Image (cartoon, rainbow, N blue to C red; front, side):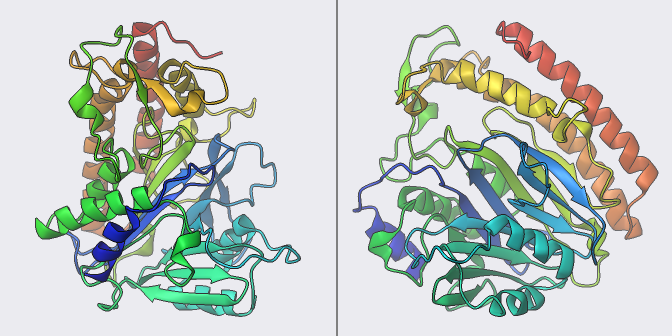
Length: 408
């Protein structure tokens, strides 16, 4: 496989930490365990607080994540619309840059959600833009089962179709912070790319590619270059003083959220497109399924409240300060490992797991009912979201109390 060989070659290159360090992937439905295509964005940013927002004033209604301080609600980082289109991006550092084009990544993705129903329509939209003021890898998926990356730069774009065996022989494509159409030596994120490919290849060989493959990638604690696995270094409990170097794993201090889209089979109701979302750091945030039906109906714990805050973002911020306690300039590269994972099972990541398991179990039961009837039952969906809000608030308060961590 060309991609695997390239990843091995890239291990020889130095890893340079970068602020915009997203790790993304798309998987063809021809290779997944349920026949539905998949997409992942692990979002890294210096603007680490996100919220879900919705829009219904254009051609298509949509839901998406924006930075919490974006009052316009149009600086889309990723999202999905009512006709099954999903879009995301990762910054590419090895495509030519030009600064006189005012187009912003988020606006492009917002326009796509408002106007596009298919991968082809997204391509037609960006073709009209002619050039871009930055390098970006856009991942796009639709309700017809199509998925592709568009590597966009000053000289235009190049498309990589996940169903093209010359670029995706095993039905998946990964992008971190470089583009295959650019000069590889100028890119970044090779350690993360390599580990992501390794995870997907392993599940491909086991015929187990599914949305959990992508969640496993989002939380992977094995480094793609050094092969250090933090689970092999777990201290006895959360009181251990062990400080561990934590840099350029797939999840990072700057990882603001994770988003997995489970698409639909051709002919299924596009409203059944499921977003499995961690609205804040996947190290401290449970995964919650969401649907665009209706777009305005979402769990409150992933949205702004009346004070402009978000419950899960507040808890994630508090837990990150607990896990990353060093406050000087390089502090984000070091964690108290026992506060994340430990042999006693009292680490934050370990304690949110049973909470997530219950949310996912009930969510998958609801999803199965939606699939059976090929439609969203809005009453049952509201009941589920209301339960999620209560459950998350109660369980996170318990976890916080067990570590003497509070939110303001």
